[in-house]
Image (cartoon, rainbow, N blue to C red; front, side, top):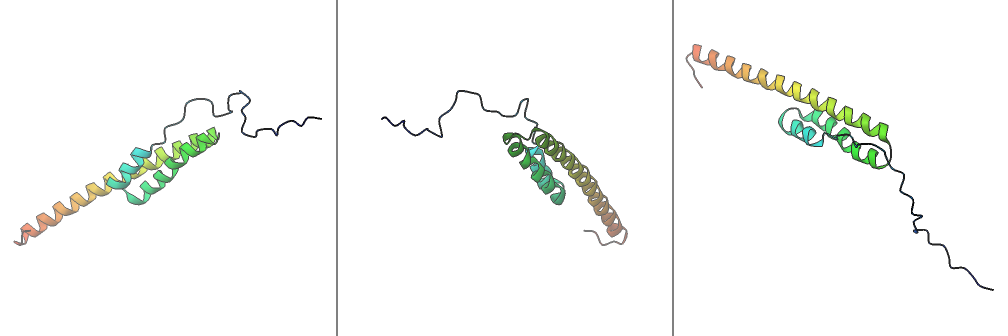
Length: 109
């Protein structure tokens, strides 16, 4: 009587692993980090969270989730960029108005 060796659970069958098909969507991580640092911190963090989800969802086979996370990262990056630019323009306008008012009163900076 001969005993067969135990089967190897790590043995591959030669078949290709079932993974996502198609091109991985852009994760917009660089853009999200830049708008967080330069424009709008709270909304930039939201964009970073969505950007970080893209790769993990793609690698786990959730193609639709990866695409949705990519779209959300892009959307929040754009919102943060636009609001950051508007806020910076507002700050510049306030500084100019304050400077003009100080000069009219004879105070200067």
